[in-house]
Amino acid sequence: MVGLIYCGENQKGGEVAQLWQAFDKREPSVPNQPKGICPVTYGVCFNDNRAIAPRFCYVASVEVESLEDILMDMVGKTLPANTYAVFTHRGSLTKLGLTCQYIYGKWLPNSDYVLAGEYDFEHYDQRFQGTDNENTEFDIYVPVKATGSAGARRWPDGQRQRSPSL
Image (cartoon, rainbow, N blue to C red; front, side, top):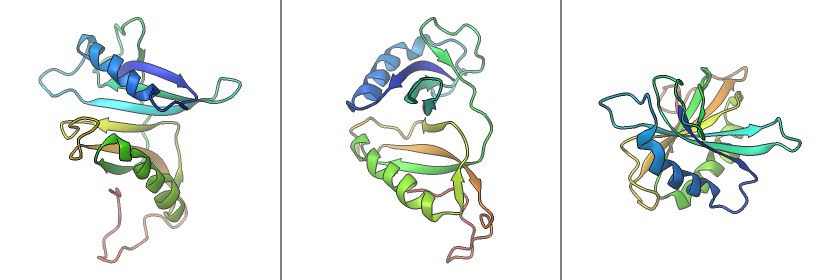
């Protein structure tokens, strides 16, 4: 994926939105995007631990077939293979905090999984209908690994939960 990056404290609340606004204008000029499909965009979250104090980083990006010819002020990333818990956020972005509270404050501590990777990411496809649209949807991928009892846990219908969804 190739995109624009923000690293900082993310305290003001508008930094990521401003990054997406800037990226949306530039996205059509990103080379090596797959032909003939609706662009799939990603919001990649990670901590920059190289700094004296770790900083939150976010990349507003688009899927590409190659990291060649990256535009001068953009970054390219290949996310490592991992096991992910996948959650679907539904509703306007003003409710995203509730989804994150559920994932990290409720689901993860009560699951048979622990965090297991550097990168969480948001996957935006044709279901994303805008930041203020109550019908918008996108997926949040959280890297996890099973603790000793994961995978054997049974749910009421007898099925194993593979990718939880909100």
